Image 1 (cartoon, one colour):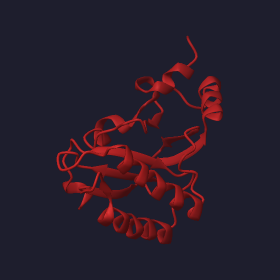
Image 2 (cartoon, one colour):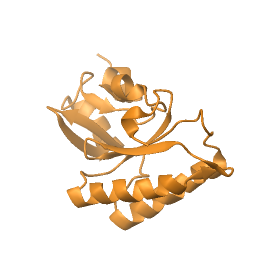
Image 3 (spheres, one colour):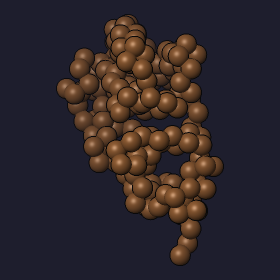
Length: 161
């Protein structure tokens, strides 16, 4: 299924790479991801799913749960796929301590500790756009994914003034 035609109510998982993907890696991920999706089941039911790469650094898996719910066994299968992909391409997809943010339309990635230090030093501020990879619905991609630090959980690192 095409990601763009997935319903806004589709459940999503965001996998952030520590670096930009090469063109070959992106093509490989889409090809292997579509192969995975074509056989992906949960409790014996085919998943209505799609995979997309955003900003050349984020792999987003979407499932229309109106057709079949992504239960534990189905989610386990997707995690296994992404673990294998991560091992093969060394993308650090499961490191939730990596933080991605945008400065002048350029994606930067650093550790959460460095991000906090950048906020404390003033290098970054409450208006800095940060990726909120905790979003869980396709509809949130446009309005709740790339948001100012002041609207994200990262705001706890802002210096009180």
